[in-house]
Length: 204
Image (cartoon, rainbow, N blue to C red):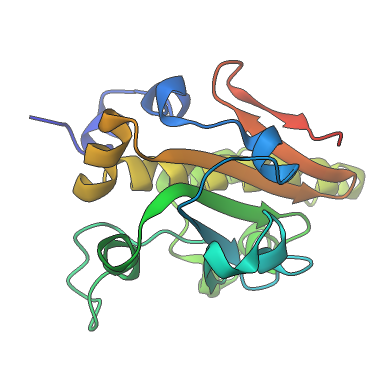
């Protein structure tokens, strides 16, 4: 039986350990719009993501975008969702071969969290602990670095949620679906490299 994300957290399994490289596609090729994928691309992006997420990865006709504050992926079994889980619904209705989680820096959601605003109570506990470890108010010059680091960890935690979707995991294991993590930083796009377990600057 597959362990839940919460069980992994209790046992001290890192976010990166839960994101196997075999689950990830070539994000560079996707961003260069050279991916041969004929199927759809599902993008989960922050509401304030710079630019148009529909145009990031080629033909907008095969791109489906879900936007919300903080590029959140809902828990797979969240009983509070009145209309069911949107991601599960999209996977049932359309042929999706790529899922991309897109965040950005600066992000109001992350900034609100760092300034202890209640609107960010849905950030994951591991990201919470990380943010609380920084002396943000003591050194304002470090603020951009703090925001970027927390945004990266938060984005990875959303990818972990996707891995724990039963329907997503089946497609990942079968090789029919691949994940991508994209963060729009001040200096351009950063892409998550699951082999190196870190974000790399994208240079077209």
